[in-house]
Image 1 (cartoon, rainbow, N blue to C red):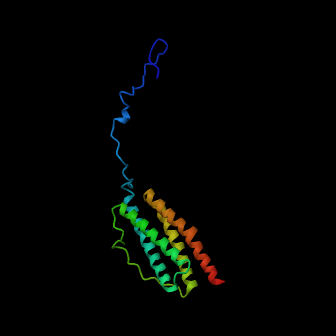
Image 2: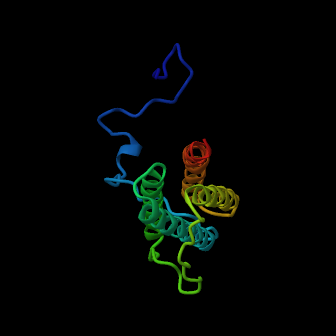
Image 3: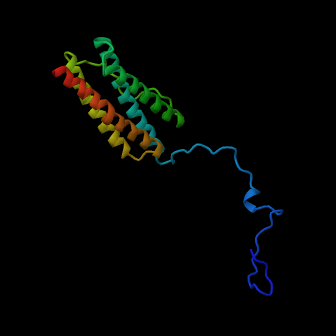
Length: 177
């Protein structure tokens, strides 16, 4: 900046580099702490993650039963693997909140899956479950949860509607032909 003098009426000057800038004097942390949901959203976030985890565990049990009954024919292996990955993501999100990833003791245990009476009926049941899970994720997105949980629910819902439901529909159509 300009120094005050006969041609300049401004008295303000910039700090000299030898003095050091004031923002450089404070020690900076080596890394930022991970963001945490605000206190009001924490219980709702944990409850929503538990609901999603229970739904995914039920779907995983169904896909496991379908693999055992029908073998490794499409779409069962891909659905089984993707469901396992969503379970891991939900469990990690619960762990980030300091919560155990198991099903809460107050929730009902998962009933053994009942497959449909044959290949096509089992696919129909899986399609209905996929649509119901997408609806659950839609409701969980609008609940008062943390932004990270809402993004996780949005990704899961998108995955169900854009990848898994079309794969089930193709398998159902191929069974009809």
